[in-house]
Each structure stands twice: as C-alpha cells, then as structure tokens.
Length: 214
Image 1 (cartoon, one colour):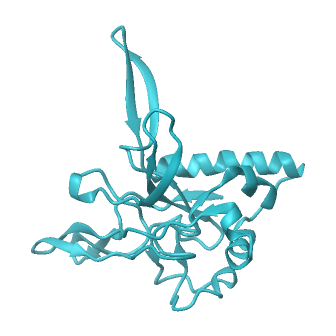
Image 2 (cartoon, helix red, strand yellow):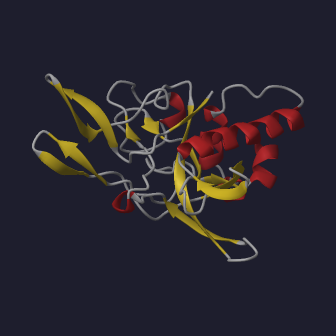
C-alpha cells in the first residue's frame, strides 16, 4: 500500500475545543505502519533536455503552492524497519519521495472548448501513483507481488548500495505558515539531511537500478 504524505508541510488540522486550528503532525493513512508513504521534492533539470541536476525538499508554501508532508507520529511507535534511525520517537514519514512541485511536476494535456491546454500538476498525490507504477515494474521483473516494501527500503538505506537505488535529498525543509487560534502561526517542520529524513524519506528513486534491488 502506498499513500501520499500530504501537501500542507508539517501542518495538520487539530481539534481545539469547538474549533479547528493547525499544528504540527502527520496524516493518515500515510503514517500507518503498513503503508509506504511518499513525500515530495522540487526537481532541478536542464532546460530543453530535461537532464537531471538535483532535487530539494518541496516547500512552495510561501507562494501558495504547497509543501511536502512529513514528520513523526504521536500515535504509532517506532517500527522495526526504522529502528536503525537515531532520535525517532514514533513512526516517521515519508518513507520515499518523488517530484511533487507543480512548477517542476507532471504536464497534463487536455482539451477545453476546442483548445489544447498543457497544465503543470504536482503534489504528493502525483508521487504516490508514480511510485505505484514503479512497484508494478518491480513486480513484473520479480514475477510476483513484492508485498510490503518498507523492510526492503530501509535495508537499502542501511546498505552499501543506497546511492545506487536512491537520490538522497539533503536540502530544504517543510516549515509552513498555518492558522492558529489567534491568527497565522509558523509551524516549524523538519530538515532534509543525509540518509532518511522526515521530509523526503529515503529520497527519490533511480528506477533503472532500484527495480532490480526491490
């Protein structure tokens, strides 16, 4: 099972008496221990050729374009597959990431009133089905359903072949401005860094090699 980490950065809705405000948290079903959660990045590529340059954590909150969900659950404990990550106090999400910035995301082509339009689409709701397609390719190569992915993903992170399977995203954060009981508040998120982090997980896939590794 794959699920998007969300597009509101570190913010989630919190019940504050009879009202809703925003505060720091993670979303369901992405935080479920049996789900592979997908966060988001902004892609940097060569104009014209599309050659990969780098990625950073997706956070366009200041421009109103969203930011990747990610953080630490206060409901689910640290799972066995994340036991090697120091400092975790609960289930951390996301597990993996994919390009989610609408400015660098997927061009969707459609017709409207006789005109053909190309609209950039993003969000972690692009990344989750894209990852599902990658898993379908891995299932096909293996000749069977791979089943639960997280044990394998975290084994890859801890192993010597990590850089063969993933782009490790080490820059950016998912801090956003939310609404509190008395007006706008800053919801301080998490920072990307080497290895797993609570904004881009293991990173984005190098599909050619990762399919075989899975």
